[in-house]
Structure formats: structure tokens, C-alpha cells
Image 1 (cartoon, rainbow, N blue to C red):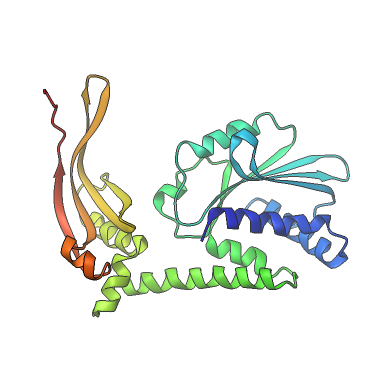
Image 2: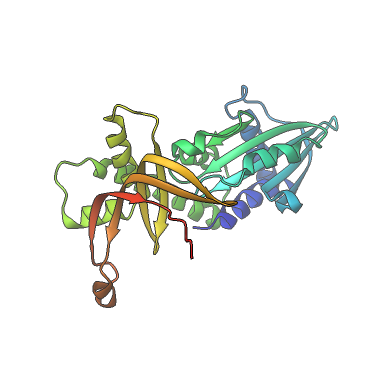
Length: 276
């Protein structure tokens, strides 16, 4: 799944306001109004005059930017940062807030993610409203759009929701077969939950959990010690951490790229100054 597809889907839904089909226009007004009131106020239909939609808005890189003009000429702006599986990065959220400062009107900031919500996803400015996968499904599934594209994407979202719920149930299952283990170690969600369980049992709760991928496979780490080391003006990282991963030997890769085994290991990364 691509973020650009999610962006396009949202734009497509909201753009039904600009159609001649009365039912679709009414449904779009209801959806736009649901987002306006989502976790902010009691539901009410907005008296909308016009809706202008932009995807990947100009230099600000806002995923979806929606300018709503009410019948009284009041402006409301929806600013979306959309994610599928990744989390926010590179100070995206603050840049969006900065972009919104020059807008004369009411602003609604949304952080919409159709994947698992990790703790880092919640570390966002208070101006943003988090819309998770379940929220998004609930917001759109009661819409009265009668299109195959709508039904297919809604079904895709529900399947993602079920997959996340199933992997969470599987993660702490008492008995696992080989196929279960592969599913867990192909899921950053499952490995995060396992590492977080280890963290909960430790005395020091302030240690960080790191996440990433290697050769297309996810890994999760529990950073016991972390330090930035400077050589001249170059910053390097040194640390000790537990890492959960899936190991595939080089010889096995030639035969079967899915071959290998899960592991949890203690690692130390140390940067040495190259004096040569």
C-alpha cells in the first residue's frame, strides 16, 4: 500500500462535493462535517459553499490540503499528514504547523495512519488530531457512496485492521508453529510488542525502542546505552542494545530467501576513530 494512494482516496471522497450528483454531494458534506467534528465538537452539518482540494501541496509537502469556504465566507482548512506503516519524521508536523500560520481562517490538523499506532506516532503537536485505522473505517463506512472503488478500498482497510488484530493475538500465543513464528518475525508490530514486554519488566523504563528494516525485513531493538561520539565535526553513534531480527545465512539466500531463523541478541556498536 502506498501513501499516495491514501492521499488520492481522501481527495476523491472530498471532491464529491464538486459533483452534480446530489446524493454524492450530500454524502461529501456529511463526511467533511464528520472530520470537522471528529474528537473536537458535537456533530453538525457544515453549510459549505465551496471545497478546493490540493494533494502534495506546494513547497510545504502537506499530503492533503483542503480549503473549505462556508456560505458566510468563513474559511476552514484541513491539513492532513497521512501514513500507511511508517511514522512521522524530519520535523514534518512542525513544518505543517508553520505552513498553517499564514492561513486566515480555522485550521484542522489531522495525522491519519492506516497502520499500527506506535508511541512515536503519538509524539506530535497537540494541534493535530490522530485518526487511526479504526477511526478512519468508522468515519467512512457509513458514507452513502455507491462505487466499486469505494467498496474495494474500504474492504482493504478492514483487511488491514483484521491483520493487525490477528498478529497481536498471535504474538503472545502459548504454542507457536513454524508458520506463526515467520508471521511474527515478519511483523514490526509483533516484534515491537515483544520488545516492549521485555522493557516493561526492566527497572529502567526510560530506555528507547528502535525500529527499522534490513533487506526488506523489520527489526526492533531495545537500546540499553546510547551515546553520540564526535570526531572533528562528524557525529557517530555508539551503543549497547538488544535486537530482535531474522537471520538468513548467505548460502541459504541462494536457495530460499525466506529460509532462516529468528533471534534475539545483545549487540554493541562502537565507533573507532580512523587515524590513518
